[in-house]
Image (cartoon, rainbow, N blue to C red):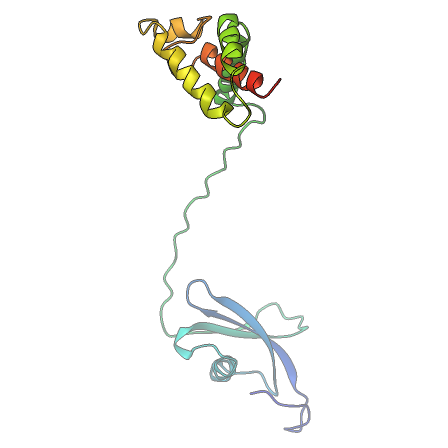
Length: 191
């Protein structure tokens, strides 16, 4: 298999030994032989380097630094089955910039903030409710005061009426309720 120069009287030569062991395991080693190796010698050398004998399907060797284009090839007795490759699908690239969903979200938040700024009655009520609170009780106290104000609101106002209301509404999330709560927090914290 592998010999040192001069062990058999002639110079040893390096060979690139390529192998295939299964569908996905391919590899190569550089090994030294005294003469051109046979398939048996190649298999023994690969087994000695840790490859399982039953997995080796194809082995071949070619001299290292050779000008010869054809490698010496040895095939296993098992017939090779062609593998059908799936066609590669081109990746769809997303255009840079803001998507439609993000743009709508930004517009909704901006409109909600603008409507909150114009809910003056809710801001005045929140300021009055927060004046009695301390910084320790402001979060829960302002939330309870908002609940009381929501209980007094007209339950028939609906979603659209609640969006444009000046006073706190029965609808949970509305610009007026947001204005009331944050004004109450600001007033309680001394702001």
